[in-house]
Image 1 (cartoon, helix red, strand yellow):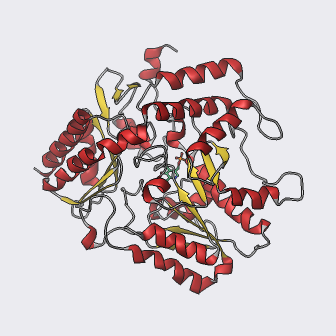
Image 2 (cartoon, rainbow, N blue to C red; image 1 turned 30 degrees about the vertical axis):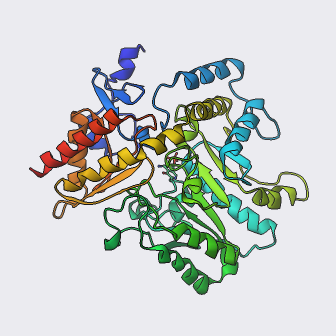
Image 3 (cartoon, rainbow, N blue to C red; image 1 turned 90 degrees about the vertical axis):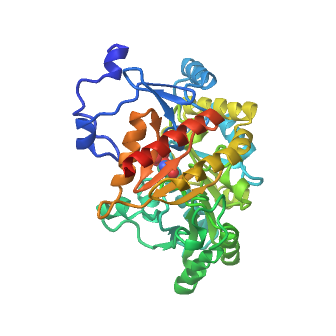
Length: 443
Ligand code: PMP
């Protein structure tokens, strides 16, 4: 197959596309053939500004030479070796590099291949932790409405998106959900963390009263919920969740799949928001999405309880054929080197005020009912068309794409998350094109 035939497939039938309206797409295909820096390119060479870093993942921009070369070099040295009862150096090095940037005391890193696998791994580690400590009754897992933790049975069950759950029956038992933190009228159009709503964390106290703390293993939340439209935690909310978890011996898991690797202007959301979890998931930006990889970092005390407390033999009956895959490990090390050398988190933080003002300037556009932001994210919420939820934002998405800008929509919320190398002219173009599309849709 030559390059052209790959970028212009003749047959769209065989590929069952994920999370897609397959029939609509195949009747109206929208293809990306190439990417570089802040841009995608269609098969016919049209440039599209990437306003979403792919799916919140190409934080260092596309086509990074350093990452590509690291993968190529590694492929030539060692394509694959297992990491069950065997090792290869680069997996250890990648873990050490991740541990360098995680919060203090979270120095143990387990590799997966995706955010979904990271979520399920984190939940299993939480259960194993309590069991190792003789607390076998702690099996209850608590998520949050509008939480997204991927599509494995654990993450889907703890996740709080009806549409992702209803198709699949009963899911995991012993799962509860805290209320989400979005929608308080007094928080609309907040810049950064909203002022009101820290008390929503007290819903955890209600679950403790209902079930008994001795049955609860862990609470899992995204520091800033991304997939359901950039839901930024109210000031003090995560601190309060942390305090309640500490009071009752419940583990706190942050799903940092989106918020990790600079998205909030710090290495992880934990740092930006000033709350350290016990377990942290990551993926996406870990390899700049050049090769699939995820990871779970845990507090040393969690590792100690499971590994050092074990009598001998295998300590955690969990792992993937590709845990710590050499090519992914090489990509992760190169990605973290780019982050360090170019201070991408610092760069994100530096442009954040400009980004925030630009995003909030959309308040003047028609049908905009809320705007929120944190780091280099923004959620712009539109009033739905009467009786037709999601259609308005999808129309805006199509107009933006036709005008050379990629945005993401979830329901009637537009979610933006450009690569962290974004510059002011990109911000102007992204927000300007989006504003024109919102106005044109309303006209
Ligand atoms: N957790 C969070 C917070 C996510 O945003 C995502 C992906 N958007 C996932 C988990 C799942 O990651 P993946 O698609 O790599 O399985």
